[in-house]
Length: 472
Image (cartoon, rainbow, N blue to C red; front, side, top):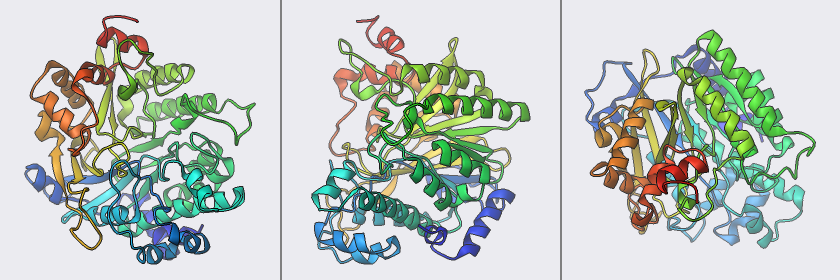
């Protein structure tokens, strides 16, 4: 994989991107989103936009007839190959994202009057069961599989870079992003990606940290502050170290790294944004009274993580994650006071019965503070087709319009309380959770309190106390 292929152009494009990141001279336009959300359009440069994408789960195997050509061609030629497919309908529930859906997504990201200062992509670029699909088509040995994984990751990254020229893209690892299998990490792949993702390659220390463990810290443009990108796969209950040295405690290494970076940022007075794929806390989908309840992360890692987050929360703007495929959030408290908001981004892939969605955040150019979040959704997934009807993407809600609060820690905390209290916030949350999908998979009414409690409870004990009145 080459740097130029990820930028859709030669090396000078990368140089311009580096200078934009370092100098904060990226364009700042959010008027299209502001107007849609009912905001008074700020003076030039008053408010800026950033993009949130998660769980793309791109599936290159949908049309088996194309596989030999894809395997033989560089990713820059994949669009021309996919365009010859007779399978033109968009992926539907419960499939992963196909080429038709991904192309529609890329077009929808271009909103009139908006230039993204940056984009956060919170993991899971590959389709589920990627290895099994590859094997079914007779793809070859492990070396051939690893090469195809990296081609697919290169294709996703390159196509997004071409759709958003000049926008710094910050990539975070998910559990489906390794050539070593689900919930695994391959050191050789990390080293390759550290050079292939321009915002990492532009920061030698970030690239070195990522190559070692899949996590990094770097600068966001302008006054947006610093970004700490975590590899929470290493802390997951399902993590497998089959492709790494089992004598290393990679999860503890990351905790030590995070603590050191939070302390250094705190001493320097720097504000940071955290991003990861798997969030901390209880999985609402599986959290039911009378059944065993587990957090997403292993307790030996989650406990010290939450301690560090509470200790340094005053310097953390927000924590962005993905993984669940649904539009959700969590609020971490310390002695009853909300100290950190965690936003969970909805997915592009409709695998979980959700509508494909992306989100646009608004922040103040003057100090980087967050003010609102707009959610854009594909509303005609059932019938959309490359040859028509086209994908009907549109704004379904803004956070401030829906809940009456700014999109920040305090706004998320207030919304969580109001959702738990009842209507109308509860009905809004239910609809937005799946981004108004036509099949309402969750949250079911019978488990309503479980979903609400999972927003503020991070351990099984806390959850049971909130949802069930005590431990089972």
